[in-house]
Length: 109
Image (cartoon, rainbow, N blue to C red):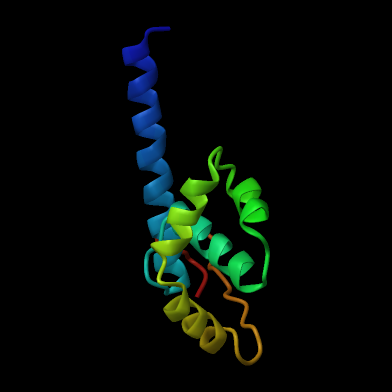
């Protein structure tokens, strides 16, 4: 296989994943976020739970601890901590999705 062919398929797969994530967010009624946002959230939660930089580095699979340090610094951690604490108060809610083909209205009502 050629590099051009593989690049084409990689771009196609990434577009499909972003589209899938956008549809999931719409169905759940939440603001759109990406898979990378989940990495940010994971790093932030681990940081606030007191895990060391080296543990967070291992989870994120960064080769260089400076990458992890920069990553954490750019998050505005104090603001994120406040948002997480407020957002996690109270009982959890399970979001039920309607069955059916994505992007098409379900016949169930």
